[in-house]
Length: 120
Image 1 (cartoon, one colour):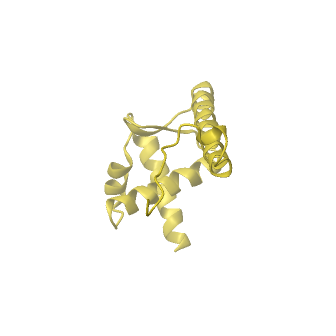
Image 2: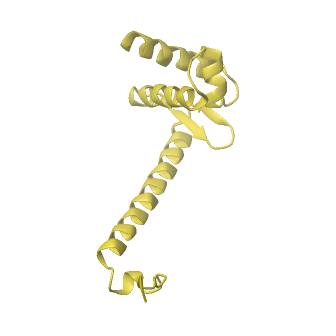
């Protein structure tokens, strides 16, 4: 299993190096001949990209065009800054939602819909 993952990671890097344009995960999976459902294929590509990034590859992902390998450190730093901002936003939303759970009688749920009592 580990050999297969390593092969996918190495092949993924070769695809990214060879491509002049970004590649979407589904196309990468097709070129690598990955099996499984579309989501399983995309998951395998995301895991390979993560492993490559963990090894230092500067891979940028876009929502509109897919993955691409860059050698521009400033571009990659900007990409990581954007990911950091997204992560902070998600953490903020999660913390607010947790606070709303705890604050069932206070300001946190001031505008929550009123649910009528059963049997009245």
